[in-house]
Length: 334
Image (cartoon, rainbow, N blue to C red):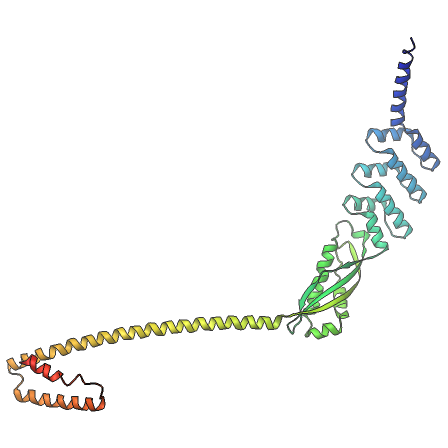
């Protein structure tokens, strides 16, 4: 009998919890005493749209206390679009206190673009320093210089959406340093006046199209690297030497080929002479038989040949092979 009254109490408790979940009365009372106009029905619709009412109400209380005129629909729309509502509220408050022109539409656009809008406003108020990596460049005298710069930048609120980031700033500053050092006649000029690099790089307007405004570029350190000019000359001389050696080897090979060809031609000529000399005895024997050559003519020819051999032996003492030629000829004639 006593268990039956518990069922209405349980059902009533469940209904009360559901009502308080969709109609957060305590949150509505807090908003009401904070000067934020929002109805219980709006809070209930936020629950239905899966928007945390506490996030929207607390953000509206913060913005209202800071003097910003924002509505619940604006904050709810930004939350449903995937934005970070508390970060946008903090950025708007910081920009308002620092007299930086920033509207709610700009802040939400920056936030939805994937950038930290509060960090951007902080950077705009308090500029930050970006250290560039070591940038190596070569002066006109061939000496390599390694420079490192410190770039002071401030966020450009108007170009945060679609503007280039820090990587582009670093790349452009490095390019400017290389150009400045490369245009110097001597590395000593750069070492004597490092501010020349800063002025030249800063005058190029390297922050165009970026999300930052370059305030100053300071050369933190310059070191002397290698003598690139001398190294290039050595490499060129080595290359020229290899080319000359290759051409000399080509000429030597051609000379050897010509020499071998001449030797072959000489041996061929000697062989022809030997064959021709072998035909002489036969021709003389045929002349004797036909009567075209007499015995006196033969002796006269032998005398001339002996005189020639004697002159050759006197002129060339090492050649002693001609003395037996006449005896061989006579043997062949007989």
